[in-house]
Length: 507
Image (cartoon, rainbow, N blue to C red):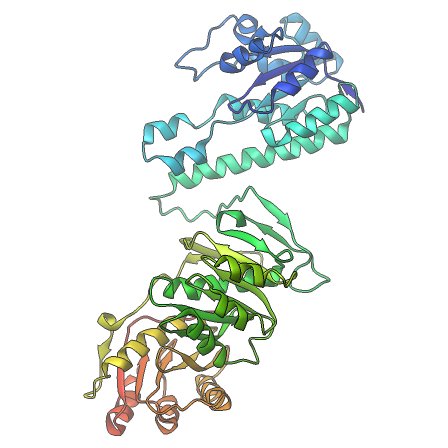
């Protein structure tokens, strides 16, 4: 059902890109109504425009809060183009409005830039959101453009269809408009909910991108968000669904280590299979890779410092999917970009979102992000034997690594290096055995190493296994009714134990 645009209401905050549309409407003889700054903008183009105030017989009042909220505006938008409604328009001298170009005050941008509540409240759009909803509701007869992102689409429609639109065009623009209004309302709700205990789940992410596929090729996948705010993509193919999940895990572990000495981590299927802290980036890479040079194949690599040429040359010897760092020396970047499919990301923002959520069953679960990180001052000594300074440093390192592995988890570490880990096991004993076996498989000496667990030990079996493997210090949350059994074993066998009081399950 084709409709010719004969009249338009234009009132926008963002005017860039609007001039071509104004000129095209004028060329096609469209009657234009406008108000305020938009009216002056149109007049500045030398195009005739009718003031909304002349239509309504009311000026803009209350500091501009009320301009278009009037039956002579909304009647012309909401009227169905059928006999009864058209008769009422004629009776009350209301013009039909076929095109509405209206955007919204920058509420989210204002919230991000100031704490001035009065300035924020003034950016809650009333007239604009009402006009958009009215025009989108009446899409069978009215074209609604609610964002400058849709100016190009409108201009093409005007030029290719000589000022007419099809029902499919109008319905698509209505869909986009309700997406705009939904996102806007959610941003306002989020602002007012900052200090509220209201647990209503409302999320709106404006930017979306379809991925090649989901976890598997037979699944569709999308990313909703703005990756450009976090990363500068320096080269390589597009990130896949699985890449994104692994990159998120990689950023999580390196966020714990980013402010210290050079650190490198190797991720595989969201788990850290190698991580180390060393005096230089090259040494950190070599130590991380030594933790599991088999799993590193096809992995995600992340560093907290700039990648230099010497390190790049070593990294280039293995196959990896993604390499992330805050900077790359020019010669290192040039070398790494020769592998055309390897993804190179320069991380710009380490910010952690305060909440995490995921869909399951017929709903969504949401929780605070796990931002707790325990160090020496948070440890409670529960044995007479104290950890040495070196062991304390390794215990703090092991806790950070443990926190980012799937439960049940056991981490073995020494000299700020992951030696072995057991993760995702249904038994903590299995996790402990896996960690010991893995460390030995890659040739590590566990004498003097430390062990960390993501949750308490219900029985002394794990500390016994660790002791017999050469572990000399253990950190665990504590909290089991059988805590004393593990403590007693350590006490009797000269193993130091500290507790944190904080569990780090990761399901």
